[in-house]
Length: 86
Image 1 (spheres, one colour):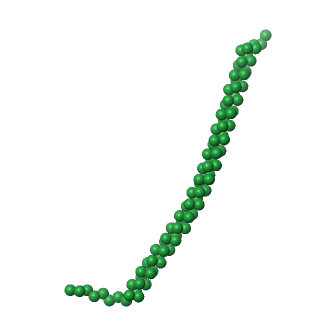
Image 2 (image 1 turned 90 degrees about the vertical axis):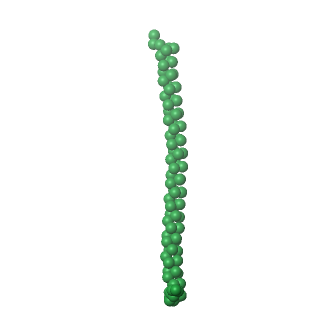
Image 3 (image 1 turned 30 degrees about the vertical axis):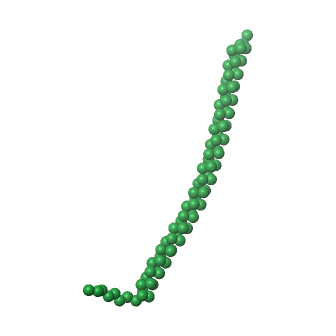
C-alpha cells in the first residue's frame, strides 16, 4: 500500500519561501527591538551612575555639615565652661 502525493514542487518551495520570509521579518523586528532595549539600558546605566555620584557628594556634604555643627557646639560649650560670665 503506497500513498502517492501529487504536489507541484514549485508550490511547496513557494510555501517554504513564504514561511522563511515571515520568519526573517520577525527576526528583523526582534533585532530592532533588542537594539532599542540596549540603548534604553545604556541610558539607564548613565542615569544610575549620575545618581550614585550625586548621592556620594550629598553624603560628604552632610558629613561636613554635621562635623561643623558638632565642632561649633563644642566650642560654644567650651566657652561657657572655661570662660563663664563674671
